[in-house]
Length: 216
Image (cartoon, rainbow, N blue to C red; front, side, top):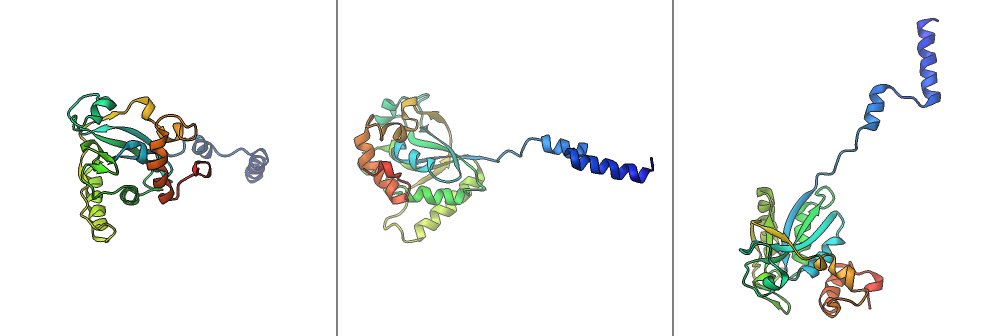
C-alpha cells in the first residue's frame, strides 16, 4: 500500500475507533494534579463557635477542634477549661489557597469574633479563650501581621486588637464529641444546644451562613 494512503487510512481508523496515540493515552491515564492545600491553627474563643463557621467558608476543606500551645501533653477538655494548662481552644483549618487565599481567610477570622477582648469571648473567660493566630510557616506569620495591622487601622474596632501571632508549638485534637459539634447537636436538640442557640446562631446569621432549618 502507498505509504501516504496507509497513513490516511490509519488516521481515519483512529478517528473512527476513538484510539489516540500512546503519548496521549498516557496523559489521559495520568492522575489529576492534587490540590496544594495549606493548614493554619486559629483561636477565637470556644472552638464550637468558630468550627461551624469556617466549615461553611468556600475553600475550606477541613476544620478540626483542638488545643494548642500549652504545657500539658494530651490535655482533656476538663483540664483546659480549668485554665491552667496554657492551651488555647483552637481549630486546625485546612484550606485551598487558590480558592480562599490566606489573607482572605484571616479577614473572615477577624470578622467572626472580637479580637480586642483579652482572654475572653462573650461570657467565656480564661486564657483558653484567647484570640490567636498560630502560624505554621514564616509566610503565614508575615501575612498575619499585615492583616492584623490592616484591620487595626481600619477603624472597625474601637479598642486595640490583642490577637497573638505566634508559632504553633504543639497541637492536640479535642475529644471526638467536640468535633463537628454544632452540626451534630443543634438540629437534634442534643448536647449544649442552648449555648449553641445563644452564641453560635447569631454568629452564623452575622456571617450569612445560617441554614433555613437552623433559623428557629
